Length: 85
Image (cartoon, rainbow, N blue to C red):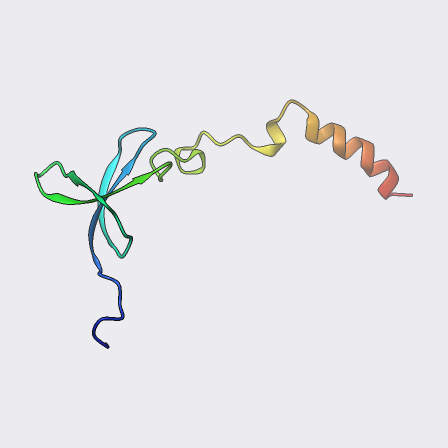
C-alpha cells in the first residue's frame, strides 16, 4: 500500500440513537466525538439513526403490504378487470 493516501482504518463505537444500542466495529468513517464502551475503552463515536436492533425489517415489526386494511385487494380487484380485457 502507498503511504498517506488511505484513510485511517480503526475501531469505532457506533450508537443507535433510537434505542441506545452500542457496538464496536472497524471503519474509516471520520468522527469528531468520542464515546466509552462498556469495558471502559475510549473510542471515536459515530451516531446512527437506525441499526439492525431498531430497524423494522430486522426486528420483525415491519408491516406487510398485503396486510394494509384491504387496500391491496381493492387495487387488485379494480385493475384486474381492466387487465383481462
